[in-house]
Image (tube, rainbow, N blue to C red):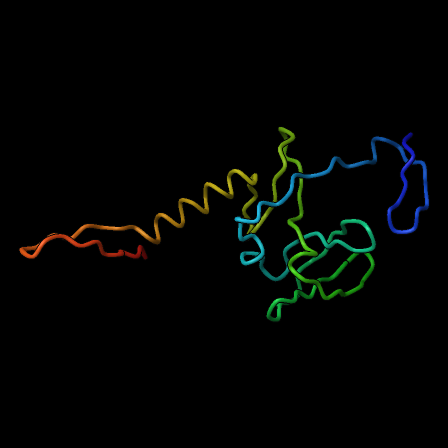
Length: 139
């Protein structure tokens, strides 16, 4: 067993080590995961000193309405109070799901870079007056 002390109120309790979850990696700020989070998808909310599983219900400007289904409680949260719903895959790697696709943070980063390069391909067009670079947007 492991003695846990909670930051919120200083209370302590003994828990089985097997019931503890390792801390997931920090969410990279360059990954726009919140902009891709769809209604009904899982995230985690920082609430009362811990991370709680929530479901996105709606967004209004910079606020997110989330449901803690286990407690049937709705919260209004800012982006700073949310993070992806981290899980471990069969190999033990941390990953999260967006739009029904589960990937590691590195895989999400690679997908983002590939998407950005496809949508902003530069092309050089040359004519009798010289060359210029134009943006070509992939459809």
